[in-house]
Image (spheres, rainbow, N blue to C red):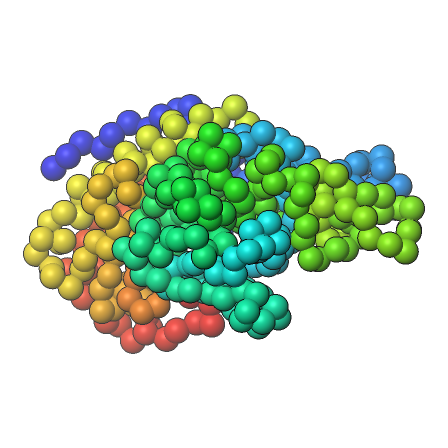
Length: 407
Ligand SMILES: *Cc1c(COP(=O)(O)O)cnc(C)c1O
């Protein structure tokens, strides 16, 4: 039996998070937990700013600056200079803006290449855009992961990929693929939903063109939290996005009849920002201030490794349970995924024991390894519980079989 490794006190800050007692939370890859700072920031908007200062708050509490302010708090987590990141809308909406903008930049080309198994919303948005612009202006080509590199040529306008696969937890080499795409004049748009706040990123250094990401997963901004987008400095000045709402105008409160975009990343905005959600995300991001993402990564890897060491035995003896995440640490994000014919029921049985994990169709059990609030001891307990559930077949109990609307 392996010893339980020590937690890194610089990274583990469990008491900053508001997790129910006894809960082992391994679903931060789907919805990050609440935190003291996030709770306080939201209460402050509700109980002081909105209640007391009403509409004055747009100025006195700088509500109007929140998309930019929150964007610049996210920037260092992405390895980006502050003026290239803004928080707004959802990933889906931001993808629409950036795919349109990318097609305008690469206007001799019409093909968007993406991966068949990409998160569906990414594909749906590209399909919708193709429908809107017409197939002669925009065409989505979906390929398998191993076909991505061969699909790059001088007819492709944009390569749109998710950095860490939401099902398998496989991480692609952003630096290498971006470089390769650029050799063919292809712009690259990365979806960082399962990367931002989980793994070290160097968007500026890797010459990434565009990126989008999620506020409510590893950044812990709360349900429906604003997403973010990144635009490289070299594209910012010429960037044209189609959702030309007033908040992206150079001077929204001049109320001019003609649209004229703001100079900087603010031009990516559309309508009024949801201030309560912004407050929650703003507070949550305090946890990342001064945090070394390399150390976060090292701790997350250590948690995954300890989990795997604890379940090795059942992986060897129970052929139904398979690790679908690559074993090579370099190719892993911050989650481990297993397949099993009864994954859904196994997830329910774990949740019943206060070990919160999730399931993705058709047969994937996902576990997130977030070292800010997860200890090695908890991960070990989760692994032992999984081992017992798989061995004793308790997941077959009828109460674990009914599917909820959200899985
Ligand atoms: C969670 C997730 C999204 C969510 O998109 P929204 O439009 O913000 O709901 C998008 N892409 C990936 C890869 C995701 O994991």
